[in-house]
Amino acid sequence: REMQVGFRGSAELTWNAEFDAEPLRTGTQGMLTVTVRNGGTEKATGVRLRVEHPADKAQFVQATPKGTHAGGGEVVFQDATVAPGETK
Image 1 (tube, rainbow, N blue to C red):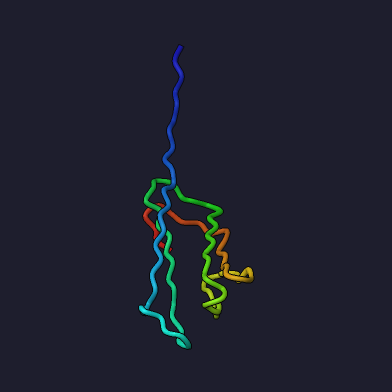
Image 2: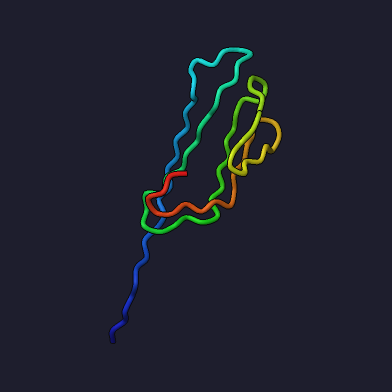
């Protein structure tokens, strides 16, 4: 007997975070940029990224795109789709 089997690729997500200005000084604003890259061969769907910051030392100002400030020191980005080779 023979059976034909098809293999699909997979998503391979990596992330990076960096500040636009270091060192951050008390009373100034800085931007934390977080990127997610899909190095795999299939799209990643339903991607959820949770970014934590020290709530007692940093105040959340805004997040784009569609970041939700969950209170305390947490910002959540959810329901993203990242295509193969794409960085968001």
